[in-house]
Length: 303
Image (cartoon, rainbow, N blue to C red; front, side, top):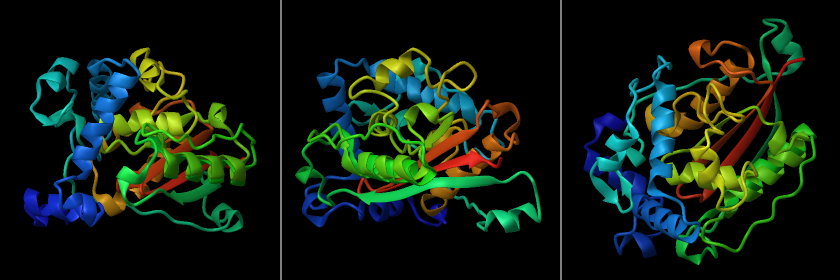
């Protein structure tokens, strides 16, 4: 359990996923996030408030999730005034240390129909990796693993989106790009076919990078969609992190990816209660490290 360790011990354990060549100089996941966020905001002329909007949205969604660690709203002003952790990121731009667990039952459709009509089908799934040493990446704002994993999942489900190329750019997470492309190709779905998504918002900046890596937004434009309400649960065209995300629901590390899939299951089977959106196809993208390893999964309601 995460809480069996002190905050300092937990931080050291989590930081161990970074390369020793970087960690020995004090570079951690949090500092990577801060550096990338600063680069993104300046390069794309994005306001600091756009990151706070991500955190506020996910906290608002978490209010209706009985399994969320923090079931309360947090105002944008409160987020902007919270203590600086890794400039420009502040306390409320980070997910909490969390205890938690999750479970899924995987079986054939034939077996599933013996027990229930309310099951979902994994249409596409793909995994991808990026360079372990982050400073070797051409563009830190491109999550290559997310893109590659997503493409694999799309291909499995068989819907056929336009291919997303891995950009040589620090704002592109190559693993996200490759994962996303693989999932899309496998499933046959494309970004426009996704009705609801759970993204790995360990830091608010990651929600932007994954939106762009998965093809939901053009590079440098995710912040504008968030500011315009595109990802809002009740009124947006593509609700993102209806569970509250890691930001509100919590991040118990090994259980986080399963928890994402559980949220998509509940959305696609109409069991999400007050969080329910109109969705037939859902996507979840889980990230290890700072885009080092990415798994993208596309699911759809049984027909």
